[in-house]
Length: 275
Length: 81
Image (cartoon, rainbow over all chains, first blue to last red; front, side):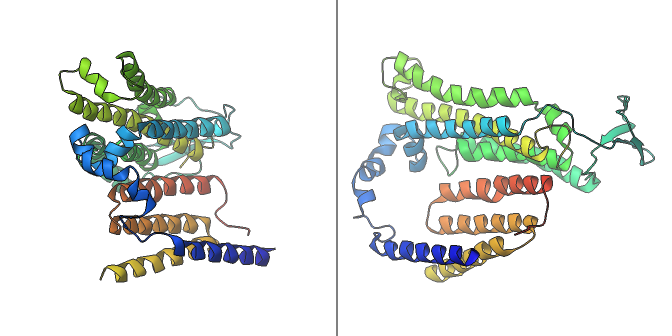
């Protein structure tokens, strides 16, 4: 069976490689993709939107309908992960572990202990106890810089590579780093499950809301130049501001969805302990 | 000089892909897949698609590798296949 699969894969690969011979050359200005609307974007995007980064102008303005549904797909991925994995039943376990921090002694309890809320005791995971002082300290130092850089990526998406999606993924990754270097409960106590769900929803609503606002102001859906009626800028700058608005929405949604997916996978949906 | 770098990275991409399929250790496969994504990110950057390279680096090499590692943590590390 494996050999048949290999033959099929090799045949399909050969056909695909053969088909690439008909492709236009890389960067060919006469290729079909570069002749239809691309010249208009390349020549007029800066005047029309005042955004120097063409990729952002195309993704968030000319093709913002696509990007809105991409955000919705990400949101759907988060919801699907939640619905498939989240379980509210208790894990069958052999015990609870509590460490007395000054002595380093670990105590094993058969039944769920009532841990006093003090700085001398901490609960340990049963399977994964990565409490390494060096890793925790380094991650604690690094986290603010990662988060600040991700905010920069979102805010500076109009001028340089990046944007809501990349910045959101990086912010989500910083939450994941917090969960890995400390433990899952620490991360979840900072940003709870409900807040994450709310943020994911808020991001999508912010994107759609800007589109609807443009409609209410008399334009078409996601036509940001209509925002000039309520903002003290002219129409081109309003398009740049509208793009920043939707990028922020994408960033918030992606951040929350990344954290939701990670938390549900790492703890098998129980949110108590995990990687 | 351009196509030599291209060829070198493409060779490494194929090596990474084959290794990620063949390796028995699933954690190793996840890490190899991250390396594959990072090499693809270099290829996008060479082709001038910096935004795509950025996305590939953050999503492909960063977050999805972590998701794979978390999934491996919940199952077994050995592949039975």
